[in-house]
View 1 (cartoon, rainbow, N blue to C red):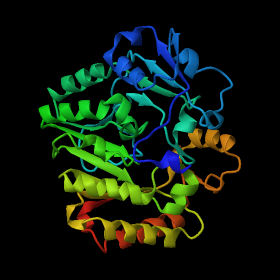
View 2: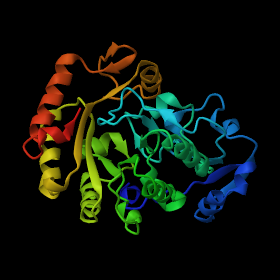
View 3: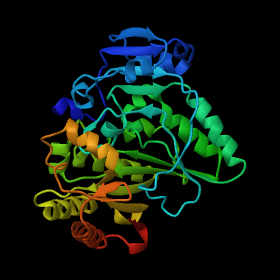
Length: 336
């Protein structure tokens, strides 16, 4: 297990399915050059593998396969109402990769997709072109790492380098890169930009160990954040999702204290707080997949199609975490 928590994600896919058209892209060649021991299988369309019937998302996590595909449409999506726009207008997100190499028990992707195989759309330049068209008429706040963790696989895709290059060209583009990884070292060769925000999800070690499979420890994440700050990057700390588990209050107090003992509070750009919440339809699927899950066994309350904790627990959790963070950060830098 410790080998899965290295600074650089090192999983090797046993099989890589490649759409015929995808072979024509340099991104495919780059990715395949890192996976020389994988079996390469040509396919007509990624859905032939990704959307097969009777797949089990959780079981596939034991040995996920990689699929290289060409995205034909829907390059940019409107930002989700469940996600904070941090006061930015024109909030959008992109999905150049479907699924994540990590295995978080609470992840909504297992309710969203029929398979845990990872799909990388190799024609990322088409998405970039779409964003550039939008920027001609209005500013854009863009989240590029919601349905995956791009930093965790930057060593094989190079997608973050591409997005940061775009950010360098357009002052009216603000990009958030969300991650749980400890891979900042892969970005050391790039000059920091004020319109690029590196956002780390932070959790207590007990939650990381029990519910955030294959992810780096809190210590490793903080070490990577410290490096990013030292290199001048804007860093957003995300205590989200906060999970209601036994001794949650003590766990989060300790996590927050550890975080701000390690990091220079004056160099933190923003902090976000949020409790676990998920679509009702996704939760139904997730609960069937993980029948023994302690965190999914909670009697969730549904409001407008979104499931979360009851109001009493939400208020307790937000209040405690916010008050602990306010010991270090100004309230105007804290978002909920």
